[in-house]
Length: 339
Image 1: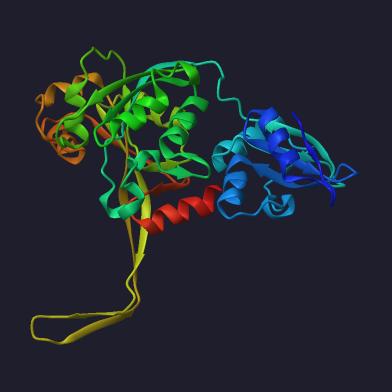
Image 2 (image 1 turned 180 degrees about the horizontal axis):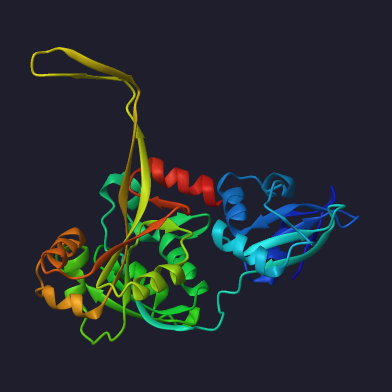
């Protein structure tokens, strides 16, 4: 991997050339003592161009996340997965660059399970951000959310994907194609009308013979999908919903009183905890028989139906990073977390 030897005479063009030669969107920057100054990514470069800042110093990220050379590659790669990143500069105790550990997107595939990603959302709550691009293709940290989701699954050995598309589907299909350029297989289902998360599954036109994932295309997470699948299979579940603890603090004092209007208690800004649906599931193929082709059906309704049918349904709880990109504030939060 090339690195940029920085001095007051270093040019913007030199940084662009080395970044391009690396071909992985990542360029370490060091001084003449080989001490790490920072990093430059494709995203840093694009933002510099958009802001008309063409001096190298202004586009260097001088506070990158780094690892020490006393850490093992296994530990470093685990951190990369948790941070949803691919590159980690490794330094010694003197701050000198030793190497860059790369999380290989093209590790050996170990699973035959399909991953169904719901990528047809309109993203109306994101306003003009989705006027010309489908929500899953909004960039976070320099790459589309949908690509981040696929890469995360890919890092755990999953390589078979079904993308359920609708709004501006041609943008998604042109970008991903059949997946060969990513070393994976991609198939598509195309909704002509809104069918809900479960309803879209009825459009799958081939047999699935193993438990499969269903995830929303606007969710970013560091969850270990191997653990999720192993939990589902070990519990002999028909369907498993991934849930996360959510805390909500009421910003006012809450008052309790009885039917005679007698004051019972006053709780100042109480906090309540719930478990919320994360929009990630593992289903057995048999669950598809409950769906009618071309009919709207949401995922909670499918779980309710399975419960009514006395099928074995489970929840898989997570504490890892998880963010649903529903509002513009969520999108900004994702940028802050992942850039």
